[in-house]
Length: 371
Ligand SMILES: *Cc1c(COP(=O)(O)O)cnc(C)c1O
Image (cartoon, rainbow, N blue to C red; front, side, top):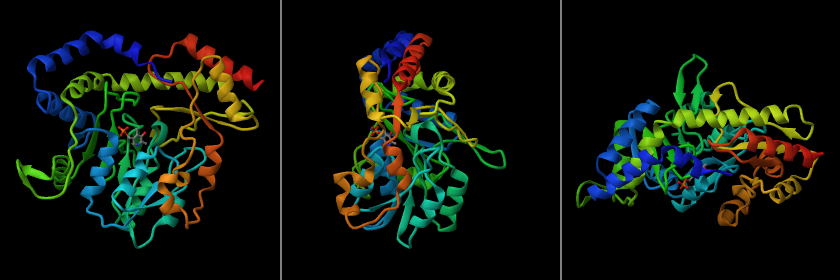
């Protein structure tokens, strides 16, 4: 699905030198690379504060902790997402409430979010799934109308842009009160291990996020609130600084691969290529097709026979996970589109190093199998 080796070889000299530099400095925690990366990322995103942490799941957890929610408060999330989005809600003893997604964008259906709002709703988490932004303008308006904070799950869309109707552009993850991202190796900005970050334009919120990620302390050994221990490794920060300089190039390479796939599958009666919403710049964390009129799982196994990995993101939607039974057992969710998509979606290999030859092999194999 991803080829990290070829990408590494292109930046090997720089990366190796940066890692060696950290080893020789023996400053493994914090230091100039973590600070430098935070500053460079905040400049790239056009956001006031970047608070690095250990991974994307922690980023979401710390963001929710910083909102000061009470057990039982409701948090609206899509069910059609990676489990981390919902898991942190349950972990903090908050109540996940699932809204449906749109069949074309795979992201939040705003009407469904509206219907999910109650007097107990205390946060909304839009997930910029597969690399494109949720339609943030109507979502932010809806949230503002009810005074509900918005925390963006930007793990799959770093580098993506949103365009407001007045022409203003904002990077994904910088529109809600807090944005969260992951530097898991296969993400668009991937480290060589775990990593994550939170973004905010709010000074007070930035302080709070920093404190929570650092055992609830501002002054060492004086703990003002219950926090956790969530740091970005210095070695990972050093690597991320190098990769951040190439993030736009990496996103562009993914878009080029997506263009190739689109051309090959255009107008195919059994395939729907990913819709590119006009308000967002899609950075194709995943290239996800909808398969209709052909057994999707058969397509996956036939591709596997040819050595082509194809994946289901995700085979079981959150509201059907055993983990969340206590929240779903007695609730009748109207998640028609989520249920439908779950049986149709398939993601093809997507990374920055796909060659024309590989793309040709993948696309011709798909077309051959579909007949
Ligand atoms: C990857 C991912 C996360 C979690 O990130 P980790 O760094 O693996 O903890 C959260 N949400 C979404 C949508 C993701 O894709």
